Length: 258
Image (cartoon, rainbow, N blue to C red; front, side, top):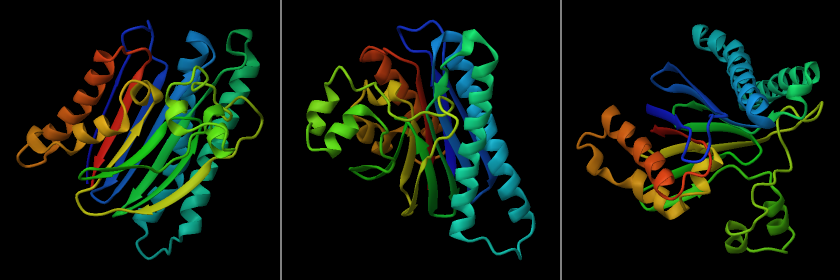
């Protein structure tokens, strides 16, 4: 498993309110999280940082002892509970911080994170930052947006094509830290050898369509050996393409190759 990550302020913003963390515990165990903050320049940047750090710290407390004690049996339910606990703690930290200052009132953040163990990804999300899986010319969104347009799609009142061009596409219906409690959606997927996982903020997906994302990631000219340098180039190309298409928001991407 190899990983690459980067973030960029984009072409329109003066500050970067995205945050990411990448923790590679072993060659077969990795934790990733991307958060996209909201609530003003000061609030959004702090919310995403607090949430990412709290999420990783909480999952650390679960997974590190498991890795040290090889005889300990860890169930799927245990892993899912650890991810849910990570979101709970992140939400509590951001919510309490927002209560301490008028400058931070209403701040919050999206969160998409996952624990990848061997060829299985256990993921959780709140908001509209996304997780994709890719293999060859196939791209699939694993996470489901908590957004107003996704709600309209689910209700049959809007098509996906209409949602992509809607002026309401950035309205999210769930965020970390805006309420005393929040629930993340949890997913488990088995991965194939040679597949990719992409964690990203909407600064990428609002500027680059899924097909183009897949083309960039699946293009193997970046490295004859598909090594770290090749993966870094793919991440750079994703961000550069978003900026070339307007770069209206901060852009963050974590790319993992199985």
